[in-house]
View 1 (cartoon, helix red, strand yellow):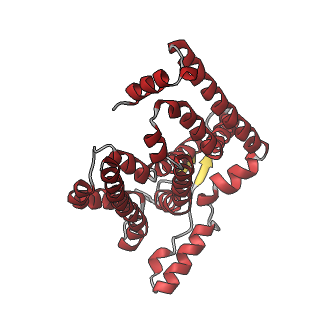
View 2 (tube, rainbow, N blue to C red):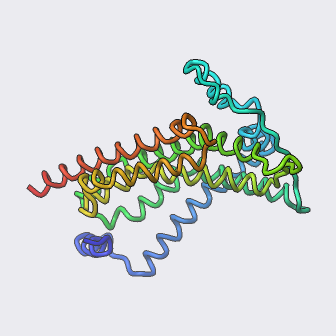
View 3 (cartoon, rainbow, N blue to C red):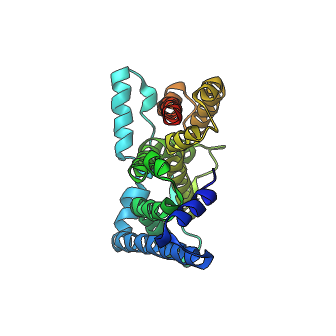
Length: 280
């Protein structure tokens, strides 16, 4: 049953919940305003220290002393493999717009403000859709704000400490010809880092998506198992794209993504089993 039908039934059974279309729009507007205010407040907090944040956090993966490079080298020494010790980054940055650096400060502040306020934004979204759900559906979604936030932050951290350093190191040192020098605009660098971090945060929400799709019967654990070979191929290609062209580096990114897929298969199986118990 669609959320809209559930919403109408809930409103009919609860006199205090009687709302017309304008009331729903007004309620949604206030949830959006509260979410936007939370993002802005977090963005202001970031903006106070934006110079330090940009130099040591945003530009961190472009620094030769970034902590991930030390971890990679330590792992390489344990495994007796020199490929994990990435070379020094030979990359220079430039600004090509009069207001470029100031606008970049605002962009960084808003991006980090959104990441920090993500749990609250998700909570506001949940408060809006919760009245449209039946009690059994609310019970099914218990803890959704916590788990979605946790997976999102894990994806952000995984991207920042693993994916972004490999990507920046590889493309920053890649030269088509020795006559070319990599002079990167700050906009291009920031867009690359931002896209990788946000995208990986969204990708890590896969178990949550699989859980709900399994509960409503759209996908099954057997379907995921049947498509495992294609999932492995897609994840391997993705890992190969964002890492240097060597097997160990690729596996370093591929393995966590594959574990995420297998967790999704297990979650799907449990969700289907729980749905059958509820129907029984």
